[in-house]
Length: 174
Length: 462
Image (cartoon, rainbow over all chains, first blue to last red; front, top):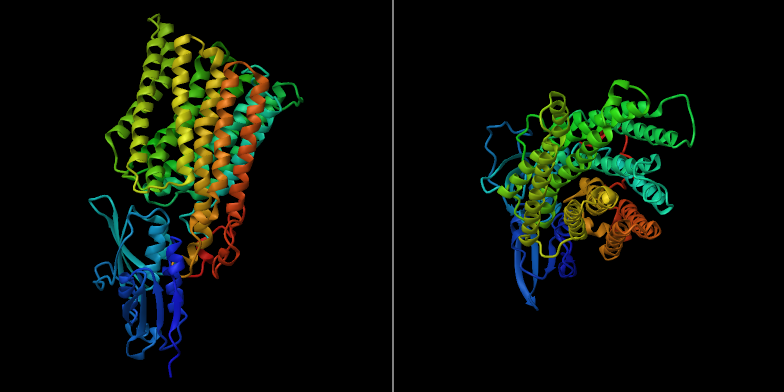
């Protein structure tokens, strides 16, 4: 009934200093219903467990030698990502100012990245959310380019400058 | 696709600016204007204004339209005036250059081109100041924005004095002919333009850009605030001394011009020293160990600024400032301002191109990195050549070797052309491997025009 796991090897990308997140999310988006993802990486990608967990994937990781890791993401209960996303779809579209948002599924610390990486990582996180879910990100400064992109994509955000000088934003996927 | 966070016309400003830089350098290589001709010859004035307005001011305007909104975290106000401003500036500058050629006797017309230029250029700068001033107005201004806020009145003073010269040259305002413009107003025109508008603003922008790209702590430092106060004091002294001295002269009171000038120079020097400490702090305390070419090349510009200060002091001490003012202004304009401008364009252009092209697919699809848009290994050769050429040019001016100067100018011209080619390649995404260049949903930017229609937000897919 199910397709074999889709295999994605991001070790080369990582060794070249690249950022494999978008490749992974691209692969996840291309999975058939019920299909799992077999990921090969050079470290145990713990942040990814949260992100994909929020999209209904269970993960199992094992070290395969030379410090490399194999992680298998399996759709929970054989559900496809789409079905989970639909089930979790937010009931309301536009949040009122005083509405309570769900707790962020991930906290990204993007303060020590050079531009535009803080924005890229934040948007990658947002694109991995299901509608209605939220994500928190720490950014080096008030991110006006990011706000522009969030507006265009129909996401909501709340943010403020923190006393330490950085900016904390909570984004809710629209 | 452009959101409102991307300044729509900045790339057009940059293109016009680079064209004037290349044009001016070609004239220098051809031996046109200073040093083959006198510093006050109309031919030299053509050259000087191609650099000061055509290259440096258009560059600064384009950069500020993009960065002032980032500095104060709010969108550009009255954005529709940005294009008319550029048209006024370009038309005004063309008339100004034609007016100088008229003075040089290259051609004759019955119309006073200089007077027309003297109207259009201040109008253009007024529009620029209006847009930027309205954007700054009412916002809590962080320190870099406060530098810009000082630069804006300076460019207006420069433009208004320039317009007065233009009217005077055209035979209007005979009442003003009594005033000795060359000794009283011209130094203010130069100091406000190169110092207040271009340098002070560039210093302010560097306070944000350098920490941003090197990940240095960018909290306001007491020394940076002192640079601002010292600079404001030096600029005020420079601008107000001549009119006050003129009034004092009329009332028979003793002339205090020299002490005021000395004080202005002292304030200026103190600023530069503190600025040097701030820069050293940014470079030393950066979190990013390997910095990109724009930050490395900018060090050449900072070195040129320091050398300019040393040269100024040396010329003042030896009483040869009048004789060598050309060399000093060349080092300031080409080493410090143009060096900084070119090095930052090397980052700004790929960065804006990347945002314009990949912004819509960011986080959804794999995209190249901003660094993939340029080939730094090639780029640093051009910057090294550029600064070597400028140093050699300054030296040949100091030792009065016009032939050598032309050879040195040829080196800077070639280096500039190479940097322009690199910018075009970045804009064309030519350095990005074929397979990764245009993921689905990304759109190839135009070379220097914004995407139409102008109301970009309305046609963006929501």
